[in-house]
Image 1: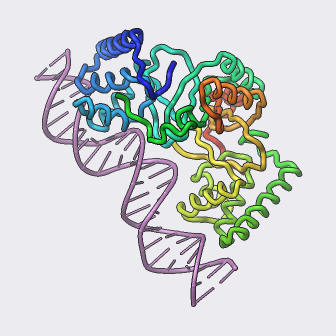
Image 2: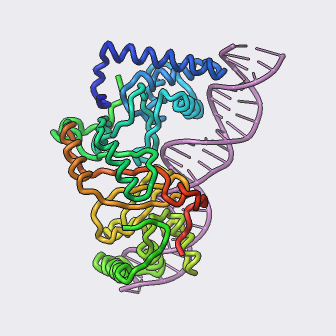
Image 3: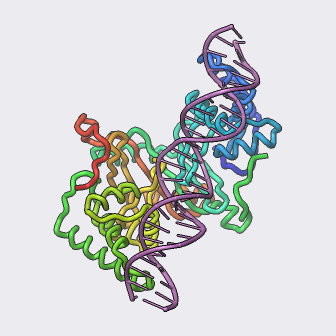
Length: 169
Length: 169
DNA sequence: GTCTTTGCAAACGATTTGCACTAGC
DNA sequence: GCTAGTGCAAATCGTTTGCAAAGAC
């Protein structure tokens, strides 16, 4: 589980991404949904990055890769990706949604850098248990929870990256 | 710290609310901001409830109390209230913001009922410490955090309140 | 060929802003 | 009276939807 910045794409990740792409094609077929060039291009972009991308990021990344798709198509395809379970929708209270390849990874928390917008993930078992107990203590049945820690990432604290979130390579 | 539902307004709360209203007037004077009827009406509504209200809720509550203010004024006044420190802005990822009287209460977490929209607050010291440590472990300087636990409140679990969030009395 | 997707443009909901008018102080 | 606030309407932003043309199977 790594951040949004450095794209240290390991052998293993390459395999995981390829698997996800194949899974999406299967999902489309299994649900009798046409496999269109746009859907594949959008899936490639979202499944191919570690980043937590916005719909606008996706449009930008498509443009860079030569492909393109209308705004409506991007949103509609992101919805399909979410339904397929390959992508998770996130709302960090920034005024827009972000989408993250789920990679079959269990629930995890997020650190959001207030300066560069970089998102880092981490998982903590104690937190899982704690939220269940806290909910119970207040007569709630916990369904899910969301923890976001806002702060400065290492780079920004050291004055390195004062720039806006870098789009992926 | 109680929920949004039952308005068990205790003696102490009445005093706290009165104090907040006075504090807002002082804030306006101290900053050479005109004390207008609209500002006071909006402050009364937001400071006078335990609920986490949306801008629309405020409009509705104003209407009920006989007062009224344009949408723009509501948003502009909410901003002043937030700047004064008497009110805190919240985003639970619902597509709109909520505002909560801060009452000088320290940071706390929220439980949000997926059925009736009720919000319950709680505070947990371990969580405060834990988030700082978690951030450090990932080379982040923690500024603040936000935890929301989504689930079913007791009433909704028992099938009691299937209705939308009740506006306050 | 039939049925779904696509893309554009219009529609949306929450929030913000421009500007003539009104009200604090 | 001078300055700041108010209200309305228009504008904005992210996202959704209607609909004719285009593409998957």
